Image 1 (cartoon, one colour):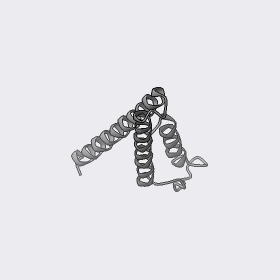
Image 2: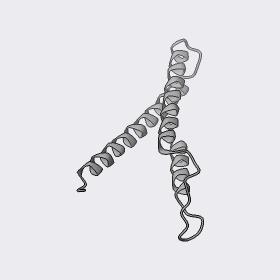
Image 3: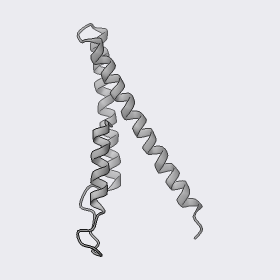
Length: 101
């Protein structure tokens, strides 16, 4: 997940929960949380595939090493972002489990 994708997902989630008028509740019209996570994971997987293709092209000498390094760095950033989101979700779930009823 690139920073632009993460920012877009955050903005979409923030806007979906904003009421149109004070005191008026609005049902979220955007994708639900599961769909957002699914699309984010798909973007990470696609980024990984692109890095693999760039690496193979670099090994074959068909592309510039800068392109390979850039593709691998983008994939690393996307994976680190996804792991961070996963950690936050697990932490939130654990906090909910510790709440007294």
